Every structure is written in C-alpha cells, then in structure tokens.
Length: 262
Image 1 (tube, one colour):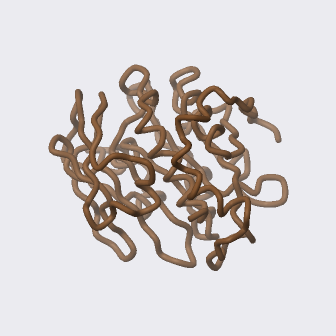
Image 2 (tube, helix red, strand yellow):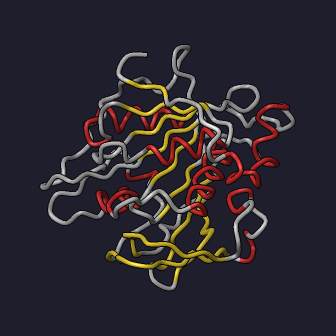
C-alpha cells in the first residue's frame, strides 16, 4: 500500500494487555455475529492517522500489535490526510481508524475535506473510529472552526483544557463494558485533556468521567453505522503521552469494541 508503513510485530508488551483476551478472542474464533454493514468476523486491521510528533504513535502501535491487531501507521499527519491511503476496499479492509489528530504548528491547519469525507464514509459503512481530544478542539475552535465535515462524529464538547494529572473514573453502569476490560475502576496519568461534556445524540453514552476534565470517554453505537469512541486525552501534546499502560489498554479495548470484536 502506498503512503504507509507497516509496524513491525513485537512481543515486548504482550503481558501488558493479557486482560484483553476475552475481547479479542471473538476476532479469531468468529464467535461474535457481525453487525450490519461490517465484514464477516472481526477484521483486526487498524490504521493510525498519526500526529506531527515524529514517532509519537509508536507506543500505540506496539500496544495494539501486542493486543493482536495488524497495525498500519500513516506517513502523513492527520492534518494532511486527503483520503490516501484509502480506508476501505480490497486493498485496505481496515476495521478501525485511530485519529490522533494533533499538531505542533500554529495556526492549526484544517484536515482536507477529502480526508474528512473518507473517514465519514468509512464509519457510515460500518467501520470503527477512535478520536482524541483534538477532535473536540478543532470542532470548537473560535473564529475558524475546523473538522466541520467530521463534526457529527465528534462526541465530546469543549469548554476548555486541563494539563497535569487526570483521573478516569468508569461510570458504574459501564464497569463491565468491553471498553473497560482489565482496567481498574479508576486510574490516573499525566495528560493534556479536553474539558467538556458529551454532545447528546442517538447512540451516544458516557463511559467515564474525571474530576479534572468532566466527561473523558464517550461512545456512539448506532447500527448499521460503525462504532465511535472519543477519548478526552490529547495524546502527544504532553511528552510521551501514550506510554501509560492503563491508557494503552483503554485504547486497545476501544479498538476491539469499535471493530465489533466483543
């Protein structure tokens, strides 16, 4: 596939994500019935549209590879994604796109419309999407809002930002949800984070809250469209932003759920 590089498999962190076995098992055994609009079984391919921090997606690629997914990372930052590599079709049957979406440049560039539409079409066809704080940041930008084609897929509103320690606390009703498999009821890590509440819409639910950042994990499940997960974490906007083990597990869970591996 042109324009991408395949992350090399690694066993360095296999032990870290052992708790995902039950979630990922359905991918191999075909035990779960796919929802309408998805391919048969559980596709285990993931495309990470990277941010502008060189190598910043590497911890995510390692964690997702350890969880049993086949990971591709883009050679262009999400801010420059214009629909290539293609997200669907015989040559690119990805199950989930992880859209890290951050950038160091100012003023912040908008994603090309072709790229935004490609992601919207991908989700409409039944595939999965994982978003970060940057999605809320771009949509809520004052003066020149960005990502307006993607806006209907953005689950978190924004009233501000938070930098420092942040604690994620699962909503009791979702403690046994596949998104929280293997995670404690609460965990803390250093983050630059979105602050805001979920944007109420059909199929949208809050999975976790934070004393510092309000709503921090949200999902949308609206068949036959694909599943969406939105995390308040801003990734590499803080140094080594994807290295926390619990956060890595949460992302791997999010990918597995969005790919309908549960």
